[in-house]
Length: 208
Image 1 (cartoon, rainbow, N blue to C red):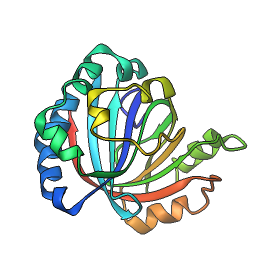
Image 2 (cartoon, one colour):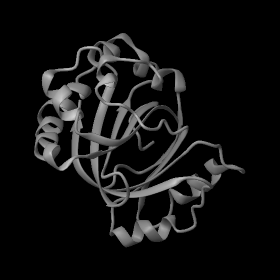
Image 3 (cartoon, one colour):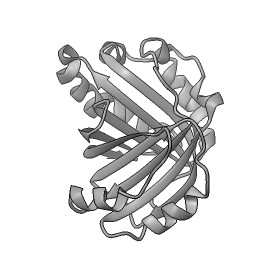
Image 4 (cartoon, rainbow, N blue to C red):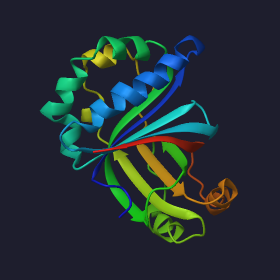
């Protein structure tokens, strides 16, 4: 499989200009190392928009979906650092979903990521189409994730300082490790009604 575990935290956000430099330093030096240190959290990645809104997409992979509502993660969410409070106060257009991995296939992680986020389950068997897409030229991974609304809706101290505008019900991700054009060509036939699509480029990775 391509993802490391059975749980995912997916976050989309913009950042106000006055908070941009601080966001990068906080995310690189405190936030992502802190998150990946939580038991059950295995890897974190940050992507920046190539053709997408909002500007950033952050993905955390966890061993189990249970880690998303576990005591260790909740302890961190309820004790945000002062740097976290300051950095997240500049967030805009935030969408955040804590998900169960329904499908992951492929040969590994890629430097490009196409995301689709949406609320209604598509007609037909999307899993079969994604499995076929995993073998397309330029594609290294395909993933389907379904939101755990109970875990996503938990109120925490960190959430109070970072209001969430949306909690997408479903997430599809397709990764590519070749040219951008190769991934776009492979994804050209993917059509999901009501989905918001974005193309992102990898900026930073932090593993356990």
